[in-house]
Length: 132
Image 1 (spheres, rainbow, N blue to C red):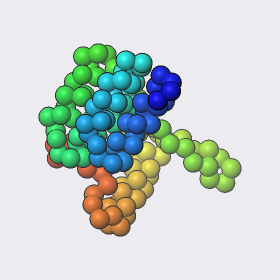
Image 2 (image 1 turned 90 degrees about the horizontal axis):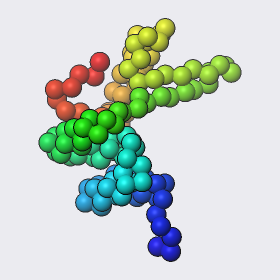
Image 3 (image 1 turned 180 degrees about the vertical axis):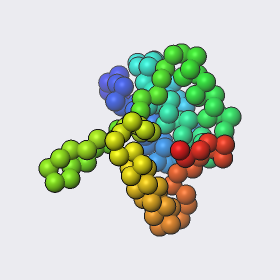
């Protein structure tokens, strides 16, 4: 590569590794990414989720423990959509949202629909974790 890789380049490589299931290169990409951006929670979470999807719970937990020991906190996911010109934003697990019960019901329904249409479960989680 004619230039020094940036945070964006290492992030793109890490994402490509997730798409192709290449844990070995993903580990190297995360190491390089963290040299440039030590507090990047997204890189940690991506590799942790890759391990979890493969049932490698010890590896997944090691990544999360490394985050904790370095004081890196996971950023809550947020989604927005526009309905009739009004923007609605949802933060993951925000039980303070005025329509939390309705949002949760719809996301559970959609998850079920996606799982039915997929050849494999889309939301692989450790059995001890609750969906609520």
